[in-house]
Length: 165
Image (cartoon, rainbow, N blue to C red; front, side, top):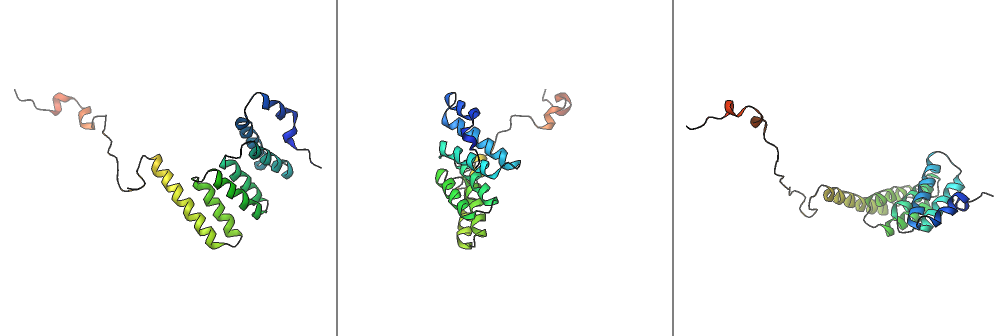
């Protein structure tokens, strides 16, 4: 029988000093650390479960939980958690793309292709937004006005320009 670390006195006292969102983020970080550095699988699973139970609206937490289950070989549970991730944050392309990989491993190429396409669309739209471009006009560019002088202005003005006197 494994002691659930969510009942750890070090964690229980934190609920009084921080909100559920902050506590869920802290527990998620702990679960990620356990997962990355070879902690007990049951403890890691309990930590992920505790984190998403405190704040189920954060898709990246569900995605981390799904990736953990996928690496542990439980692809059906991973599929379910990827669906939860997409429901929590439907415009997160990374969740769609990683879900496509699980569907491919489960032998569903059509569903995998759909999820991969959706993920690629969302990721490219995010890149365009981050660059300040309009996704409906991908070839349009914003022209920035240069605030620096060209190199020719860096030289001595008397040598470069002829004045009319």
